[in-house]
Length: 179
Image (cartoon, rainbow, N blue to C red; front, side):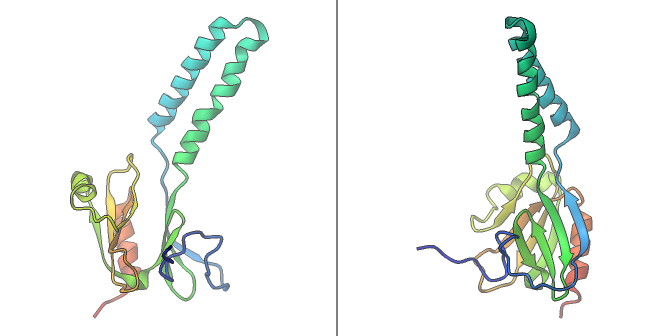
């Protein structure tokens, strides 16, 4: 028996039931790229492996390891940095989009920035197993988004963000004044 997700959470953007209308307005966007030194380390490891194989094969075959091994870390770093955190206005509501998930800001109760110094506590014993987690190791701060939706068993979202304070500010502005 599988549970259906709450109506406001779109698991896949291609199959989401977002209304067709005016073009969405992006209020905040952040691509979560890996650090530059990860790229350098990955390319250095692939280069060393290719050089090891190069030493054992003479002629044209000696360059084959470089052709085969160097694209692998490039692909891996692009794959690790593929996620995007966005706040998008679509005419009827504003949505927080993280990876493939989408959350209308109308169901957000509170938003807070979690500094890098409190990250281990937020991801450790205090973490609720039912929480939605989009964590990137190379990004220090997190944003805590507490939900107020009785139809959703998810109590909150924890999302990595390099500019956590800016994301909190945009979400608070999009939520509007609460009574």
